[in-house]
Image (tube, rainbow, N blue to C red; front, side, top):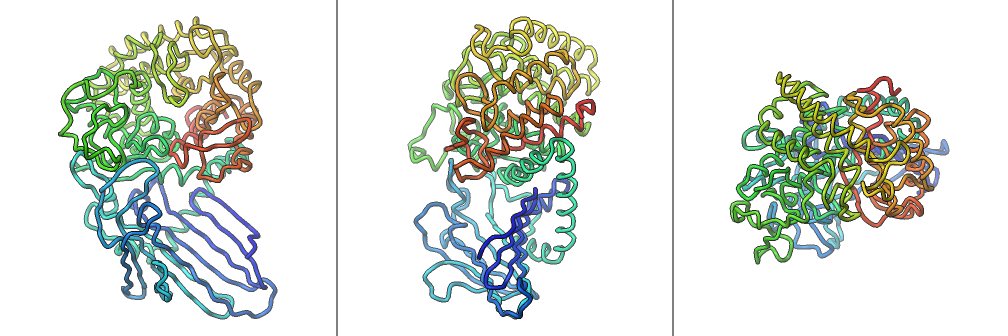
Length: 588
């Protein structure tokens, strides 16, 4: 059939296809509603299929929708599978999965779940492949046009996260709800949930258009589901919310701080508690005997197994050599020798944690987690003060570009992280301590401004070499701290526009590589005209890139090609202009 229309919204993708006088409408909706964590965490997608006459003539049509076994095993070699069907009330349900189930039995990058079951549910009949050649489930319907079919697709992973030795189910299943319960509930609430999804889409598209025009509309629609779907929402054994990301295309680390950091604009807009839920596994890791450093960890394990930091770990037990199995956290020696100190990201992760918690508190007024973890936050702030003004040869979140000493952008993040701690102290009633910390942050910012180069010509490093995009400065404007004058931002953003390539702004003078998250963070600091000029090439990349992978955040701004960084949660950074407009009305 020929596709005649395509519409992508934050929560839905709709296709229209035609052939032989018949028109088919398909609508996939993943109800990732940020104000309803029960629905957001339920792994069920709505599929609406309707068939009508395209030429006004009567037709009979047969519709067949299939789900194949590769959705519930990892790799190209199909293991021994099983499938079955049953009926509950008027809902026909089919499922399939591996015969031998081993939940949470592996971890790593570019790997899917190798356990669990895929479910297909509909009031129409469900069966398997009659030829017996393939393992699949299918919904078939043959009738006179017009007709429609409502289908639910679900996935039950049985166990979602190994959290320091405790196996946790998905959040929706924490009190015993089964995937069958969820399918029945979604069938009964279909109209209500889809109406809420349409309302959310309409409001977000309206806000995006106001903030950045049609280009920002399309970018937010392309990134919303990807950002949320790269996380798993679970509840800890202590009843705390955990929102754990998988660092796709970068070792598969879990709860990576510098992956959470660029993603938070989306969650600060709609669900600030999810930002705190990202931070909790990091605090747990920082309290482990093996973590002896005075800065924040990089991650909390390798998805979906959390056991302490995986990145830069020197310890590799024999049974881990295949990359699929990791020792439990309690087997790690309580020694700093566990980690390679030269591969850590001390300033980056410490400032990120402080900024994320301060921002979550600003978004909804809840500083309880920050107050609970105040000793760690104070230690990390002290590290920033002692080491942030002239950074050593460290990695930052742009670690794919390699180590860089005296990083100007990283130094800016340091004084902003210190200010974030001052913001937290003020919010919890420690005014005297807050004043002292904010004075230190202002002194650091003044020193930074003297050494970073003049506005519009800031350096990549304090050695007065190259240039870089100072995306971290966005927090100065978001919080209204006023460390740098408005004139600085106007000139700096204008200078970036002179460095644009066909598909956007390079990250720095070392290469043509651009990052969608940092481009949108930077665009949010500019005037409306500067913002639109910076966003437009990113949309051009999305439409024209020759690389057909899930929305990549890392690409060549000259050619539009991208061979890595696939389907990452950092695309939540695309929502920074909307956050800026909500928090800083003068930017509108």
